[in-house]
Image (cartoon, rainbow, N blue to C red; front, top):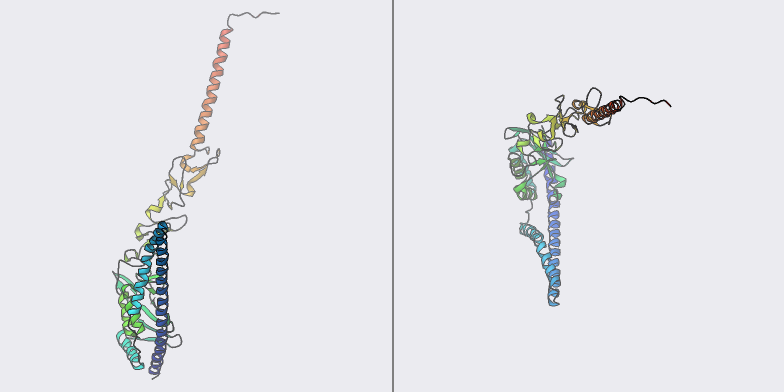
Length: 351
C-alpha cells in the first residue's frame, strides 16, 4: 500500500515537473525568436549600408559588405533551421495523473523494477548487462532527475551510471563508447528522447536510452571498441595492445614502440625521454650506463670511456699530444746529432 501511495506522489511530482517544462519550452521558443529576430535585423542593417555604398559609388565598401554577408550566411542558415524546428514542433499535450501513473506501471513491467527516490526526486531503471563486440560493459542505471527536467533545452536531465564499470583503458570517464562522465551521446535519437520527456512518456524515454546503450556506432564513439582494452602511450597518447607496449623501468610508465627504445649496453627498456644519446657513438643508453670524462667532464656512455676515464675525443687529443711530444723529442735528437757531426776533426783553441 505504501508503494502505491509513493507512486501516486511520484506521478504528481512528474506532473508538476512537466508543467515547469512547458514554461521552459515557451521561454526557449522566446529566446530563439529573439535570436532569429536579431539575425534578421543584422541582415536588414547590412542591406541598408550596402545600398548606400552602391548609391554613393563606394564600390570597395560595397564589396566588403557583400563579402561579410556571404561569410555570415552559414551562421544565419543554422539559426534559421533551429528556428524552423522549434516553431514547427507541436504543442505538448497535457498529461493526466492517470496517464502518468499508467506509464510508471508500464516502465515497471518493461524493466522488472522501477526505482525512485521521492526525496532526491529521481527515477531509475537498471539495464541488463551490456556486451558490445565481446566486451562486457556491465549493467547501467539510467537515472532521470525530475527536478532538472526544466533544464531539458540546455542540459540532459538524466545520467547513465555504470554499476559494474569496465571503462576504456585510455579514459576512466568513458564507461561505454557513447557515454562519457555519465552523459549519453544521443546522436540521431536526441529529438525523439527530448519529445518523450516533454510528453511524459517515461517508458519510451527509458527504452530509447537503453537502445542507445545496446548499440555501437563506430562512426562517433568517445573511445573505439578496438581501443577499449588497449594501453595508452604515456607520451603520445596512442593506444596499443597490452603485448605491444613497452614499460620504462626508469619513469615507470607504458609507451608505444615509437616512443620507446632500449639501452645499448644493459638492454634495459627505456622511453625516449629517459634515454641518453651518447655524443661519441650516438647510441641510446640508460642513465645508469653513462659516465663523466675526467678530462672534459662530458657525459658519455660507458662503452665510450677508457680505463683512465677519458672519452674518445679526449683520448684522441692525448694521442695527438703524445705524438707531438715524440715528434719534438725526435727533432731535438736529430739536431743534437747534426751538431756533434759538424764538430768532428776540429781542435779546440786555447786563448
